[in-house]
Length: 255
Image (tube, rainbow, N blue to C red; front, top):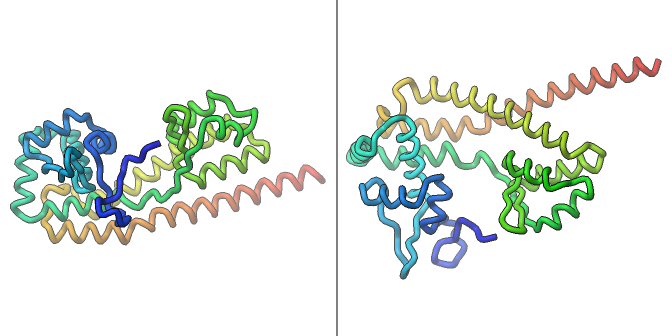
C-alpha cells in the first residue's frame, strides 16, 4: 500500500512530510476541486514544483484544516480570506498555524501493521469472519485497501489477539472497543472544554495576539501529558477496585 507521505526530496530521510495534490486533499478531508478553488482565491499558497509534480507541505495541510474549521464555524470564503490576510499582516498567522500543529500532533503515537486479508484471517483463526473485519473498519481499527489491511495500532492488535487467545469472542471485543471509544470521546470533550474556556478564553483564537498564541502553544505542550496521566491513573484505580470486588465475590461463593 502506498504511503500518503513521502520524504523530502533530499533523499536523506529528513522526515519532512510532503504530499501530492490528491494525498493532501485526502489527508485534509476535502475534495481536490476545493483545494484548487482555495488556491485560486489566495487562501492556500502555491505548492513547490519538481518537474510535473506539485508538492504540498505540512503547512499546507495545517492551513487547509484551519480553513475547514473556519468554514464549519460559519465564515464565508471572503471572510476567511480577510481574516488570513489580517493575521498575516499582524504577524500572527505563523503562530496560529504553529498552535494548530502543536494541538493536533503527538496525541497518537502508534505503529501501524499491514498484512493481507488472508494473513489477518490466519492470525485470528477460524472464529474471525468478514463481518468482524467490516466492523473493525467501521470502528476505525483497520483500513482495507484491496486484498491488504492495515491495523492502525500494533499495541491494540496485540491486545486483541491476547484476548482472543484467552477465549474472549471477537464480537464482544469489538463491542467493548465501541464502548471504550464512546467513553474516551466523552473524556476528551471534557478536557477540550476546560482548555477552551480557561486557557484560550471566550473570544476564541481570532482575537488573540501573536504573544498570546505563543503562550497557548506552550500551554498545549505542558498540558498534553496531563490528560493521559489522569485517565491512566483513574482507570488503574477503578480496575483495582473492581477486580478486588470480583475476587471477594468469588471467594464468598466458594465458602
